[in-house]
Image 1 (cartoon, rainbow, N blue to C red):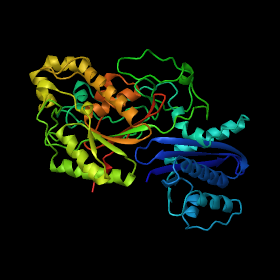
Image 2 (image 1 turned 90 degrees about the vertical axis):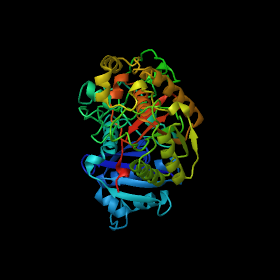
Image 3 (image 1 turned 30 degrees about the vertical axis):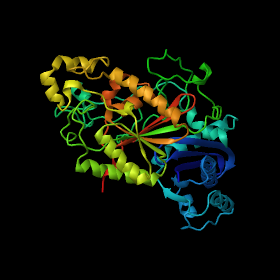
Image 4 (image 1 turned 60 degrees about the vertical axis):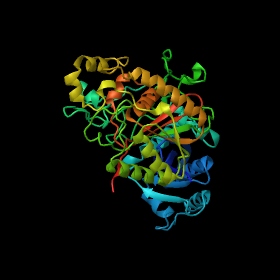
Length: 463
């Protein structure tokens, strides 16, 4: 059974006064925004606007999947407590709205949680946009099929500059070692942010980048943007140039459900705590006891979500073992895809960054500066890895259109998928942190747009 998060809000400028609501439906497993709804209501009270926002969020979720479990998060204590049955509903204007909200899904399928206003900014922004539209004499609303396509709207706009991590060349190596979280002992990388609005935990990224070709999207609106020529290995949107312009509230076409790739990095191996290069050309280590426990916790977290429909893994031992643990918990088989293997680090396999710098300083400096450069002894350049990963991505997206697929793979493939979706430069690989057994996700739409969600979430690893 799928699980949705509904965040809703409503406001009134005067109470009663000009009012509007906003609602957001997201996938609980990936954090991906599935739909947004907003409407100007005319003159009503703040509480009525909040209930109307709840009702719109529930109806939107029902349109996406009437069998889904729904968890509603709102900053209105009144609505949450009343809908949870702990407070009585006395006001005559709210009784019919609450009753209507209760009828959208069967009893027991919806739960409620109060959150601080600071955690409900998406829905609050939509409500204010709706009120602003009303003040201009416009009516912004979305319902039915067009709200299901609203997530795509966010992808049409100019890029924001990706955030950068602290540290220099030593920090750069942190992103490509087996640990992927700190590199060599003298590495100074501390940043986990990938986009301008990324949070410290890595859970907030620019939703709506172009799939390998377009812009990371954070704003609600922006002018048309000129697109550059496609680079090798990139996917271009199928639509016309007009699609690159900012779309209206419900102007985007209904592109259907995206192919969502949930990205799971394998659990720890004996090399992980030592922060050694471990690619596809080394000893192919298996998971450590800690890594197997991480895999079991990841499996439990994914099972609670209940959205993964297939499991595809790299052929290497550590990913195969992780995938088998997860797939067994989900009741799925594991498919192996050679394209998901880790980069071959050549003669650097098994070494720390400091050891590589001591033994092969010229090769290391060239590799840090140029994605076409190879590790000592041949290996695989990041440019070659990107071509391989892009081809694998295209194949998987075509094969799993409209489905949610778990990819169990490695640091470089996951970062490359994210980099391509955000249209970020190759050097961005060195500015992402990726913990063992962490989860990320990219959703790919039919026109080439992509929505990126970086959880880098290891909360499932803790007891």
